[in-house]
Image (cartoon, rainbow, N blue to C red; front, top):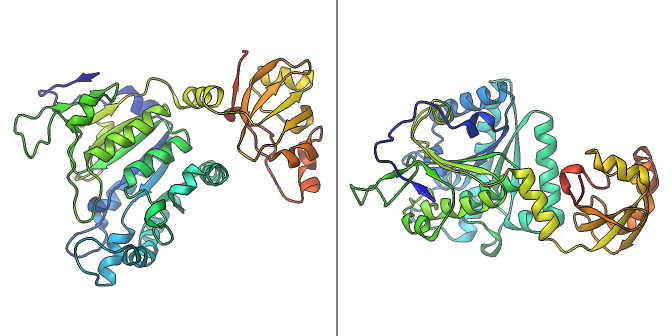
Length: 386
């Protein structure tokens, strides 16, 4: 469903979804971050963006940045030729550029009383279950400690087969991974149009999209630059990923100072509105789309705790069936065998059996390492009863 409006150049206020969003992922492209001529970071622009991040953090928001730029920075430092690079050249450029990029974020964050953290991911890190959980847990801990994770594709080790190739999709995967409320794609254009506006003077701006239909996909152009591999097509693909995860998405221009503040002030953007929130979407995925690999039986006390919104602790488990790995889906059953729901288990079956019936404080002594206190966290659980 589309609501185009050629006259809606600027709205007076931002949509309520922006004010309500508590966890926000912001994607920053190379063309915005890097000066194409000098190959250096656009310091004034990045300073303005970090001002915005600091304002949002002060307001209690959790911010994750997904940043391009390492290859663009490195290729100039290494005097690599213009045009497409060989994979090995890209990896070498990334190895050089990642140092500069991480230092820039660290320095600018510190100047605002914030702590930046670098998180390097590959495609496999978001598709293989255990690596996915490791990455998600790392980002969750960083956010809990009030740090600003800066995510980038790990181009120094990724092969052609395991690369995303663009950070639009990577940012959508990260938003899905951390159950973000909103994904912001900073672009060279202020949203989606009925046709590429550079080619069609009659193209109309679309302020709101509630469903990504073939009509919407057909509107996306495919233009990129030497520094930016993305185009509107990759942003629409990112939108599919985000909306399926219950995350709203905004496409807005990054070719201005303070682009995030501009969203708050009602600048013209395109909103993609999800039909459900991230928690609901995740629980629907757990309950209906994952094949369970085992069963966990609870005592009456644990059942009561779950139904009041608590996580499942090892102490309340009386029996475990099946062979499952960490992060696999399992069925949660009552003492008499009723299915209470399903969840993603934090321990593999053999370790879960060793700690079942034990207090959380005993886990480290039993397993030899500090694991999670919960066997299934409430955020990773979809119950069939309320």
